[in-house]
Image (cartoon, rainbow, N blue to C red):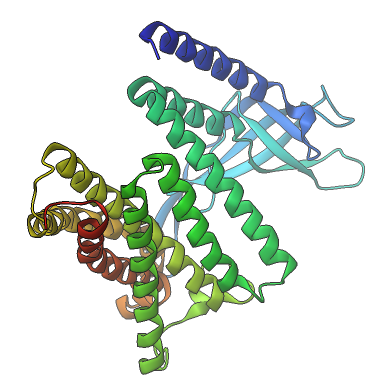
Length: 363
């Protein structure tokens, strides 16, 4: 596709995104829940609070004027209060111009409270920036990546609906099938119908399920001692299959990244050097794997730390020991990271061996 056409496509995306941002500011009528806009804010004096553990925080009370944007009270203004702390652990300050969701505190709809901020503008802005950068830098490849994400989101929503229909009885089987579909759809769109697609798909699925099998075996040998499934966040029932399913999906992402990198690199070696010996191709795959295993595992660890760090700090600040904090905030995440790391390491020789047989090379 010519550069001129790509620029026209990019301009259309920019105009579409700008229009979508404007729509999110005037779409309060689309919501069944009452929506209002903050028109005035008055902040009181900050007060210092100290709890029984010696933790200190600054607390501020706000007086807010909210103008209703939908429902029968549209156009009317109401006054309400909000209290926020400097730490912002479970609250937030509000500013003029922000749109918020409202709940009525009485049947006469004369007194309201703010439940949360309306964030569709922020979400649309971030999604728009991602699309613009992908299209501007990667062009057609960026469009394929966007379509891959959309397809995977649709598959995930279908799997969730099926799981709800089964009341969680077949959760692991549903997510095992979803793992296969994620792999095929993503790699087919990214790599195309090529030999490296077969190599990457088989290596990804084999590495994921082998790592998952090792996880199940270890649980069987240890009697699942020390695993507190009730520590899974926001889970009210069946936390065990939810955690097991998250292990499977979590390992898949890192392993798929690795197999696509190795298989693409080895396929390029075969194209540029058709006479390369298969043993040399295998050694090249192993060397590439050694180079990327470290960064991948480090990325997994950083994601794990970012996810658990806020809750761990709250546990420690409230007088809990490090052992108890680790058990209830970090342990499950650490297990998930270790299973993914095992899959990453196993997949390096798997991808290299499969590349030798399917990508070619001199015997």
